[in-house]
Amino acid sequence: MVEARTAKCHTEPCEHGVVLTIEGEIDFSSSPSLRQSVQVALKNRPAKFIINLAGVPYMDSSGVAVLVEALQTQMRNKAQLVVCALQPKVRGIFEIARLDMVFKIAADLDAAKAM
Image (cartoon, rainbow, N blue to C red; front, side, top):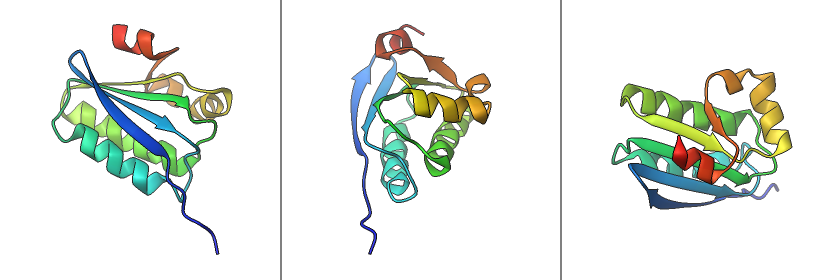
């Protein structure tokens, strides 16, 4: 039996928006909890949504799909989404899928807040 994992997510306000900080691996078993956390964070239509991935050593395509959905929501709302602090494996996924050309990516949380 495979145990379902959940990534730990917490939100905090920032100027003009919200920061979602994620810790843990994002894969098929943990992406539903990530999707729920993202939906809750976007419920009030923040002007800026920052996703801090500093604590995410690995993300598969199901996690990327959640982030793409968040980006689409923010684009529909004419709002900003920034991902920050990508670890090497996660950055590699973004580069292979050419998502580094689609998402605004910041080196760290401070840089994301300054965008």
